[in-house]
Image (cartoon, rainbow, N blue to C red; front, side):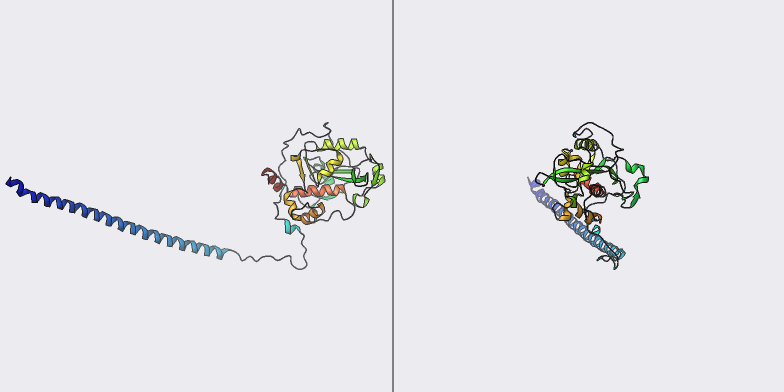
Length: 319
């Protein structure tokens, strides 16, 4: 009993020393952790300052290397500029000769449906030997380029009309078609099926002898239908043209310059006239006197070809 009492204080002291050792060890670990955290924070702050300094130096260097470009306030004295400069960034230029358009509607229904080859259809009016290519906007001799006289996958159409009934109703008097190069591939006057009340000569350019020597409506209708079959139809306000021809064409195969959203920006969202589009986007003057269906069709084709890439992209993305 005496021995047990003698060793009890020693055991207690040993237990206290062990506890103190554990506490001291924990305090040392905590202190080391705090020191390590502080060191990491200081290193992070130093790295951030260094990165910020490098970034500023890089930006300053870039600014020094940039040329001092002054904004242009117009052409120099004595030079001329058209509204093309104002609108050329409206939509992307098609650039060089583009890939062929896929014919997604090879069996599209058009009236009449019989197929014929009209590659060699002769025009009743002569085509100028020099015209402006819609792709290059430079003069080319179309009479010496056989490829440019072919019937292409893109065809532009325009019609001239006369007044019947009370003079306000339309009847087909002339129809013209051009290929993608602006070369006239079809141009015929049409014999009247009803009494003409107004030839509208100052605008249409149609005179009585033109219609007297014209082709029968049924023949013209069939020939035009055959040419348009399976092809991309380009024109301005095409509904009026197809209505007087009593023809229809698949909507996805029509490119109407009066309805294209980007072109409507020229007239602030309203329907633009072909004359205005030609002046603003092409820098040319048309319809200054009697209208020419060949000239109007050629202008519509030139507008389409110059802006084709963006137009087709807009259709694919359904803008």
